[in-house]
Length: 133
Image (cartoon, rainbow, N blue to C red; front, top):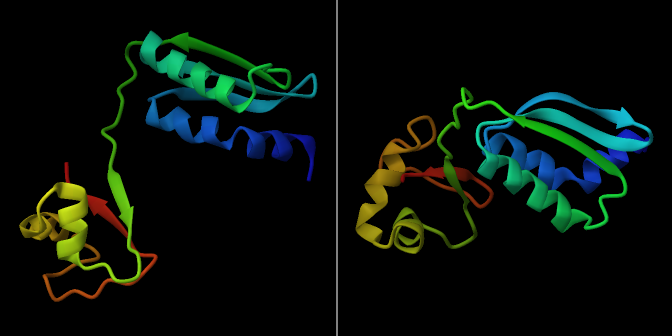
């Protein structure tokens, strides 16, 4: 594994958080044997969330360089909550556990039009379902 891949793996949680925070990346590459991330965040709060995650991975920040500016024109896409089906799950149980009431299972069906047709749709462990807000 080369150094870039090694650092990307180490900082995978940061790289996963970047799109969730609406950060637009300009560069992710190796610079001076460190992972170099450059981009823009929609707000200072989003930028700080990235920095906080970097510090959680490695408080010394000895192998990462991050340059994030602020670009208030960036829009944060709404987050889609998902659930991975476990053995023994049913739409009723998933709705009860995640939406607070089993009778709300039709909302899960509606949030997964390509995967679920109706309450008789079969779900399998490992299926990833979108959860409604």
